[in-house]
Length: 82
Image 1: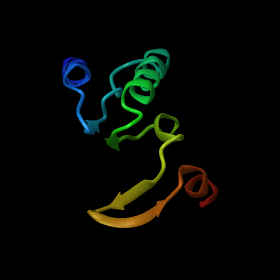
Image 2: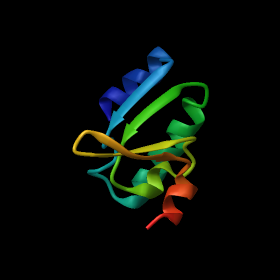
Image 3: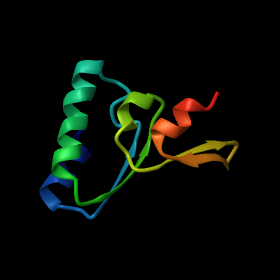
């Protein structure tokens, strides 16, 4: 969270997050995601997540398996695949 706050102050153009909200409850996750969407709307955001809800409004999702790309599409398209 400290790194995210520092990034807010420096106005970065690329934001890289690695499980940034994994240790928080869903309500806090929602608040953090709202802040990210609002404050970094003009940035490229690369995010590593396990909660799909966190990235449902992202443009593209890349799913990896053992370092290989197995899927790459819009989140809603990927959710339709079993």
